[in-house]
Image (tube, rainbow, N blue to C red; front, side, top):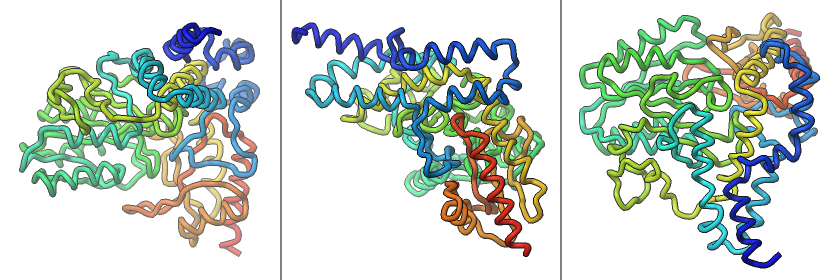
Amino acid sequence: MPTNDRRSFLKMTALAGAFSTNSLFRQAHAADWEAASRAVGHLDSGTIAQNEDYWSVIQRSYSVSTQIINLNNGGVSPSPIVVQQAVERYNQMTNEGPSYYMWQILDQGREPLRHKLANLAGTSAEEIAINRNSTEALNTIIYGLPLKAGDEVVGTKQDYPNMMNAYRQRAERDGIVYNQISFDFPIEDNDVIVKAYEQAITPRTKLVHITHMVNWTGQLMPVQQIADMAHAHGCEVIVDGAHSFGLLDFKIPDLHCDYFGTSLHKFLAAPIGSGMMWVKKDKIEKIWPLTCYGNPRSPDIRKFEALGTRSFPIEQGIGEAINFHEAIGSRRKQERVFYLKNYWAMRVKDVPGVKLHTSLDPRFSCAICGVSIEGVTSNQLMTTLFDRYKIHTVGIDYEKIHCIRVTPHVYTTTADLDKFVGAIGEIAASKKS
């Protein structure tokens, strides 16, 4: 192929990529997935959630290790094979001539990606910025808000540490007041949660920070209700959607918030190190970008993307993850992961010595669930599960929460969860003998 023709082909590939009928996803999965969807097309999403034949098709699309059972998808989820292949393909392209292929070829793919993400989020593309993770997205907003000495922010002690530390830094540097409330989860009464936030608001409160799905135990917070209450008190609302986006069936405007940040490498299963920020259009101008930009008061969402050199292959790999997600469907995905959470939790909840730290009601939880065993520390349980059973979880010892966090994903099999249930039973029994 002549050089000019090849370059035109590469540019067309980058611009179309995951958004075309020639996407890697369609090449790899179209026939099998369409057949699997037809087979369950007459069923509701709750019933499909329990159809192992259907989900086995999705499970085969991953390359997860058979040497361990990964139940810490709340940290980082593995990407499907097609997403890995996309990153590899774009990385190979980049290394043929980095400064040309990065800035003149792959950089042109950001706008189609922005529109694809906006469609998934239910927002305008002019409100979506693409970055590397929730911390970067939310810290950009936290540091960029024009807060001054004496202005107050309300959050909780169960928010993510990187966000709490950002507010503490602003308190030390700028004199803002950071007020935190604390909850004993699980809570199955939204009014209790909303009231706690409201009682913390004062006439000087400017911002309310809400974690959509609390990363420690998976508690789902009533974001819309809190946001409506906060707005009635003249406060803005920022939402940490690290664990909710790409899992729960919602659109960002449903939350009634002003700002939203998420990591795409969790439940969307995009390449590791990919994230997204949403800022309501009329708020963009007042937010200072975290990194340099020619006009920091610009109303253009792109001012938040002046990151310098970054991974264009990772960025473009997001598109294939969106294809993968949309082929399943948000509602089906949410129902399946909730089913998997309850599949194991219902089997251990009555085992002597075992305690759940998460609601089993779909109004208050979905994927993440905390569990502990009497007489076993969180670290001991996490270590025993891995050393003896090769089951990977994460231990939590923080702010009245002492448990391991267990998080399945769509590739998780019920056989894997049966092994986990058996392991919990054996460990609990050994403490009683």
